[in-house]
Length: 430
Image: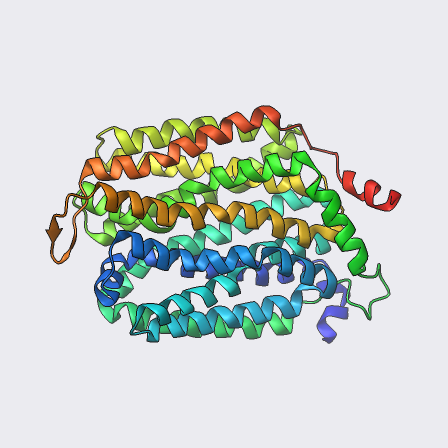
């Protein structure tokens, strides 16, 4: 495209390309959290209980997790443009199928396709960041990426709840499918692979070097400690904000769904506001580890209060906002991992990291639903299982427990700031 060669546009090209990936990350978040707003409709439409609903929602994560390493490899080998465009189209197909489904197996396939398409949204956007921005700016770009993601998550909350009241859940998903199709077209025309095979710049890494890099990565204990920390810190988002938070607040506080959704949206507002600040302060004070420790401590305290202490709705709004702020230390796990890998294998590494992180959704969305069903006394209300406050406390107690484990892991994390490409020298030495 001629405008790309125009010098006056050169400085904006990296941001325009990153924005395409960031908008996809925003879009897939809408798809990811949408079941939390539709729990009543989905349970009625497919005649399922809490555990089955958790399984249906988690189908997204099954595909998402399984594809992380293959997509990371493919993206490093062939570039993100075609992968991101195809992935967005897959999300469109999945949301369309889910909206059309009249049986649980068909809905599960639709949810699976959404997860498969969304699998490269985050790592693809971060791959664009590592290709088009200098290493010292990657942390900031991660922060801005999370801002767009939280906008998507917020849009999948209260705004979607309002939309459901007027046109229903199926029509809402058809509308979301149309928006995704427009995004896929924009990606194809705007994104460019900086290190495409025809480029005169550094060639793409060979498959042999990528597998050698993966082998080195799997042997790196710091990678596993940081990735596990990131996964445990993500449990509040994948289990609470993405699925069970809205029904929890609706039941325990007797709130309308749109009010409960607006309260959960405060988590994402907190993330959106604090992400750039946290990454900036981390860069300014030249530390990744200490903000990660502070985040874990604050998150433990906040979720203990939210789950076990009776509080008023205004206080709940404030606390949920603060949980979003406390979550942002999790992002530094990705920044830390980027600092111990070469950029040539960033897609593969981020894929493995994101796979580990998203296991939190695979495990804890069904687990919380299963715990609710096990504690349930059999009471039915308006044709659906009614879970008591004690049921919810028991099921959600797994969240602060995971956060406590994350805090314990920080003892084993070494500072990574300004230690970029440690693995690069090891790979080249071989």
